[in-house]
Length: 107
Image (cartoon, rainbow, N blue to C red; front, side, top):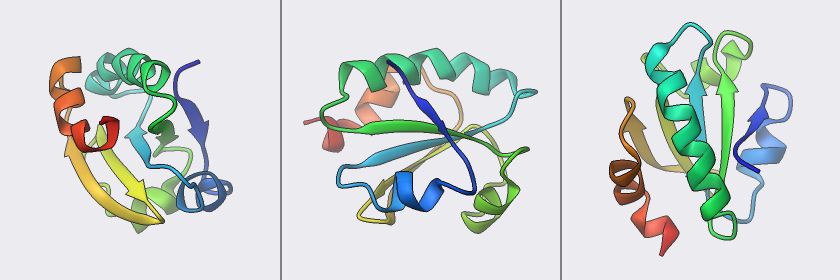
């Protein structure tokens, strides 16, 4: 299944109101490292769908949410739990490193 897209309009409902942890991948079309990390996030989303949801927010198309969370470099991934940011990961990383960053949510 992989990661789904969210927008400024549905961010609160899809992310902040979620019962389980949600990792938001802040990305853009023109960002090479974003494109590199995208399939890795899709794999993690599929393999750990019962524990964490992964969504993608295009910062060019949804500037309000990106501004609200002070996204200055991409890719930036933020994990939200009960509407709060509980973890931030900046930059593209290989799958083992991302899984290590997310270990507390995947356990």
